[in-house]
Amino acid sequence: MNNNINNKSAATPSFFTNPAAPSNIPINHPPPQLLSQTQGAATHFHGHFQPPTHAVHPHVHANAAANTHVAAAAPPPPAPPKRATQKPPSRPAASSNANQSSAFKTMELTVAPPRKKRNFLDNLIPPKIAKLVPESAIYAKLLQLESHVDSVLVRKKIHVQEALRNPSCVRKTLRIYVYNTFANQVKAESGKNEAEDPCWLLRITGRVLEDGKDPVADGISQKENPKFSSFFKKITIYLDQGFYPENHVVLWDNGRSQVQRDGFEVKRKGDKEFTAVIRMVMNYSPDKFVVSAQLSKVLGIEFDSRSRIIAALWHYVKSKKLQSPNDPSFFMCDTSLQRVFGEEKMKFSVASQKISQHLSPPQPIHMEHKIKLSGNGPSGTTCYDVQVDVPLPLEKDMSAFLASTERHKEIDSFDKVICDSIKKINEHSRRRAFFLGFSQSPAEFINALIASQSKDLKLVAGDVSHNVENERRTEFYNQPWVEDAVVRYLTRKNARSDTPASI
Image (cartoon, rainbow, N blue to C red; front, side):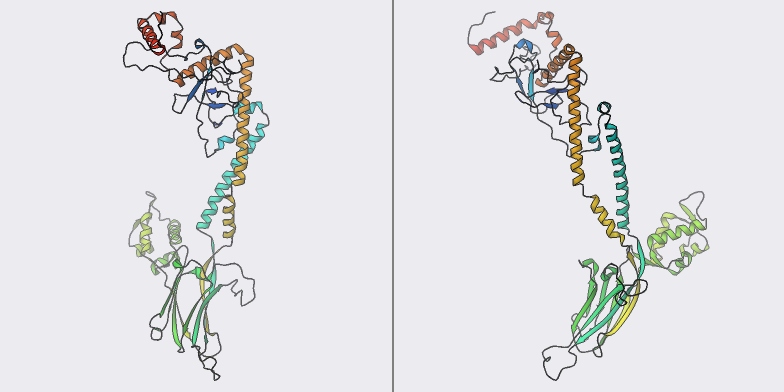
């Protein structure tokens, strides 16, 4: 009997479960409706028995055909003629094995692939099991704490990512140094430098001042700041075209450069002094614009980003109480705004387009440096101070935080251990329910299990048209089609055996 009590009844309580079957079904799904044992195997498989959509290979333990409802299909009646004959499942050749006394079929099923991604429900202990294990309340509290920590980390991560996209900056002064050096401008009498041509070298570099002082010149510890070239989009140097007709324009573009630099050098051969023109286009993030004189007089802003200019306009409207009470999407233009926009009433969505007419890109920095080829070098050192936005040094820490939150290997390994433990707990709970149901009412348990297995095996075999209850009654075999069915059955049997048959 122990070999037959291996499947769960679909019409019985949840304790009709295989006691030794490791479950491959996610624990957040309802319990399986039927359990079956592979023939001769030591382990068992839990799965839903449904109409055969996968490769199902039934194997029948040898026993009397009367003990199994699907051992042989009933012969089809003569009408309707198109009804397909149901084929009984084939028996294995070696039927006289140790399980010969079993009256139930067992089958092998193709296991569905496990889910690749685990969700939060995989770590939950079902309420029925939680009642049996008082310590599970502590585990439930830990899950709630973990969920809270995860939500806090997600919010913090979003905040950090937003801060990295729009980093907070502090206004500092960038001091630009422009000077040149020269060599071999005066020939030595000894003649050892006669083979070397006269040349000069133009240098452009800069450093961010700390409290108005150059950290290098004053010997102050220098903080880590962006490279000099990161403050500029484009740098163009114009040389004298009369002296250098082929390459008198030197251009550096930040968009084409892969590495930021601390400075730039231009080296040429020559012994003639001239004036070089340097133009530097600032790199603002976000882009900044020069405000027209009319709008600047109203808002008090001469140079800023578009978002800050629009925010200043909103504060102006709010402070002057110009917003329309009937339609908040409009605001009234006072005398100052009418001079700027030329309208008495304006919509906020249109204000952004109107403001664009009063914004212009900033002019590049224009410098002129005379290339001197005499005197003490370096020659003609000139300094220019420019206001720049320097990101706060917290950017590195924020980037490190984001990198640390992406390392989930250790956490995933712990989650896998927890999920495996939860599966084992559920499996032991099913085994306990199985044996508990059997111990409380053995006869009803076995009868319900037999009825469920018979119904499910017929469903798997495709023999769903038969009614078991009707076939057990004598009235079923007194119908008109029975005589023709018996004759057809005996005819087929005689054809296979080639021996005379007796009725």
